[in-house]
Length: 481
Ligand code: SAH
Ligand code: SF4
Ligand code: F3S
Image 1: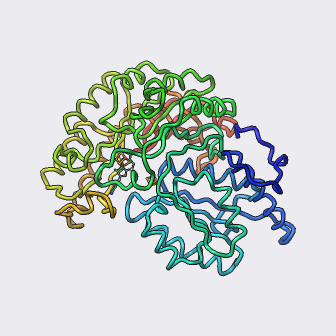
Image 2 (image 1 turned 180 degrees about the vertical axis):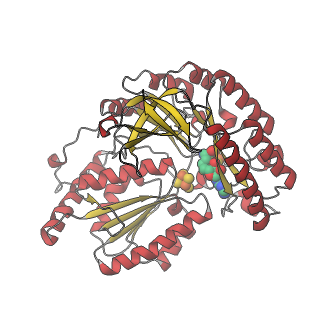
């Protein structure tokens, strides 16, 4: 926590402060009183469980929820059979929503065994009025529902929910607010996500994110740098700068600053050895950013550059605002400037109106670019987005057949590319003990490839020079140099 605050100094009998984040620290102190009372009554501390169901941005939000629960005094449960369970939901594709409803059935069974259990739902899916209405009517055992815009109020909402017998629902339509200096509990000691912006203004025609995350807002550079300096002092070596479109960072600041300029400032922070970022939109990737990547000693050799489709006609219908040629040309320029760069992507198959010819254009880009890996998705219709009401929705069996063909191609190329670094000695950030073999450590190259090598647990969180002996498709086997 980089906010100097002693919870014991907070007078919980006084009125809650109006200013943030002070108000939330006041409510954390109030929740602590509830936890103490729980302990007196049941002779144990309450346990909480946070399930992150979404992207890196959701994962970072979950770290903030976890920190608040921990500061309030909750222990972390290993399973969902806990006293307080919160799901941080995603709604980018329909199956994300189905997963939430499936899990809720299980939680209901746990709640029947443990009636004082509290169940909370937050995140992107809660910004959809139909989802909230379904939960109110069909899942009335849920205790707390809030969305993405007021997640900074979690301590306050938790306090209300702990003292209420009915469902607390607080979902805001939008916000232009950014509350700084709330606590976060990192999953890894040595690496951390850092939000640099929130929301999205792009309105790709298939995508629900702008509706559930609101308009694009950049954090002030001084707040971002302050957080990263704090993280570096706390042992973090690698930061992942997060935003839906990091390349448009800074445009709405009072003193505009480009993403490339922000990266140069992050580069100067001592202790930070690796810088990653996610996600880059091809339409906004500037020459300055390519130059910053070329010059930098810390920016990792990995660029996630979502393609979505290789057909210029479909890209236009998707409102992506670039075409096939622009994408291919961009990849050429970046590869010339940054050798050994791993490029990964996202591709959607079966967008409305996609013909076999359009699909072959996607296959063509895949063969030309030779992605190191690609996340492939079947188009999912999201109510309220322009694509949902487009004619010519693609029948599932056709989309599925294309998806399988694409996946085979993507995997074959990824496997061929996987061993391109065999025989070299490269820096690896040791991340954890190997899950199958405790004598091995698992770490990552700067291009994000996984490496397993013999090492000791003291090395976790340090960067080691590792000889890459052999590639096994999706990972390398290496040895310390
Ligand atoms: N902001 C990021 C993407 C966030 S969503 C970007 O613009 O690249 C992550 C991925 O989910 C997208 O890149 C897209 O490939 C996929 N996706 C988004 N909406 C989808 C939908 N309706 N159906 C299928 N995949 C979708
Ligand atoms: Fe969705 Fe497009 Fe925004 Fe990415 S850039 S979050 S795909 S609208
Ligand atoms: Fe999902 Fe929300 Fe991220 S919809 S992909 S969790 S921004």
